[in-house]
Image (cartoon, rainbow, N blue to C red; front, side):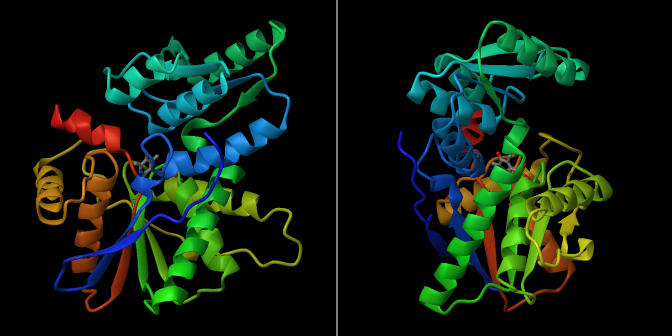
Length: 307
Ligand SMILES: *Cc1c(COP(=O)(O)O)cnc(C)c1O
């Protein structure tokens, strides 16, 4: 697996009220794509340059992040250690972590942090030089991946003349949104709105973490003003019961979007966010605008849903 950064396609889908476009980051050509693959490329660039001889990360059994990390470790013959809470069913993602040869360290959900610290020191005692990646690919390298995506969007706009008034996406750990917000700030695109549809977190926590990530990303950028907290639009009105919980509306959104557009969505992230975007546009009476939805991936979760 080599490192590269191809631009993912942007396609228009049918909608009468607004012009809706979808950036197909689910087609990013590494390990079933998505935002975790985007972020992982940046982490592995650093791993490949350094003297690390194993990788430690964590995530639930449905984690897209852990799948990608395990796959990229396998491609390099690097041992991969994944701390994962006991709760959670077998999924296509968790089957893949094991298939890629990752060593799964199970623990109680309340002991994740402890278990990570313990595993790190154990690995060091055994003489390993581990590279640690936060859950979901959180951190500046993850943020950077979505500054890069923002720049791809700007490239598309200058090639086609289309200007997006809104960018929507599923927001979880907030790293994707932090990257987009930083990209918008760096490009001084003050008129455009980036709207993260929360898939689980409440507004105050969600916004706080995004703001911290943005501050972190700019901490060494002398002389640059920081984006204000109020520029971060994180909407928690559509979490619909919390992480991984799906309802009838999400199900019909998934079905309709696949049948009508050939566009697969999953219940945990993109289906919920796509539905949330439509509700947001209705609620705010937004029409005749150019709207971009970033499809952040999660393809294996679609197949879990189909099962
Ligand atoms: C992790 C994930 C998200 C959320 O991304 P964050 O950077 O954690 O906010 C959205 N969509 C999919 C498919 C994901 O796997």
